[in-house]
Image (cartoon, rainbow, N blue to C red; front, side, top):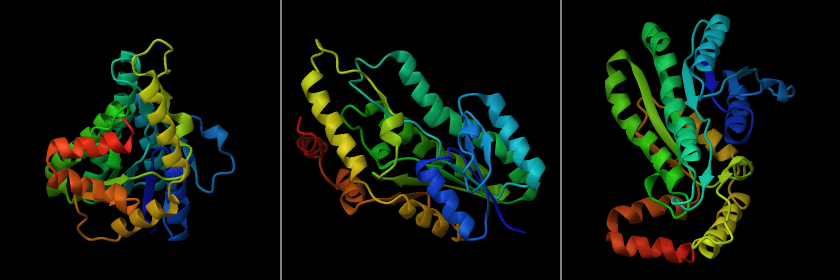
Amino acid sequence: MSKVVLITGGSSGIGKSVGEFLQTKGFKVYGTSRNPNNYPQSKFPIVALDVTKPETITACINEVLTAETKIDVLINNAGAGITGPIEEIPDAEIKRNFETNLFGPINVIKAVLPSMRQQQSGLIINVTSIAGYMGLPYRGIYSASKGALELITEAFRMEIKGFNIKMTNVAPGDFATNIAAGRYHAPALENSPYKETYGKTLSLMDEHVDSGGDPKEMAEAIYKIMQTKSPKIHYKVGAFLQKFSIVLKRILPDAIYEKMLMDHYKL
């Protein structure tokens, strides 16, 4: 029997690329979207799911299990970007981002674990971000939500190891997807003390996404992880300098690393 893969946020961007690639390798793929009817041309089934609504998580998992009797691999890919000066981002938007990027994935994991435990096997891949390894200016909330998921994974994988269920993180850098279009941007307020620096940083971030790599690189990396007997705790996928920035943070004094980031963002 083909292995069954469920990809949250599988209707576009990285999730879509991963799903289409895995299909060519013989996997039975299901993706999710808040509005499945918007994707009639999808090459694999799209199931309704809003990670911020627990009842839709339960319904989605039950639908896939009813159709396939098992879920072998969960790829927690659904996520949302957010930018802005932390001082000026509305509390509701901060909470919404954590609901999507942290609490949502946790609840999807909780929903799939009982069936994986029953079948005594499973792999859970959490898609985080290289931004989750450092506090980036005007992306602090995004960095925090993705960084939290990295740490949750470290703890979670130890708790479920005895059930023969594996868990790992994959942190992408910048890829050419539509993430910028769906990102919440705090408005650059006319009277804001951050107006000039935030505007510059926002333009730079959009340039990075537009010139990002091919999402197929993420698909190939995830496929390789799925073939690995004992996946590592952390994987990073992206341009060399983006991955190397994590190494630099470990070896450079904090003040020097901070200056390097501020120079990069022209602050």
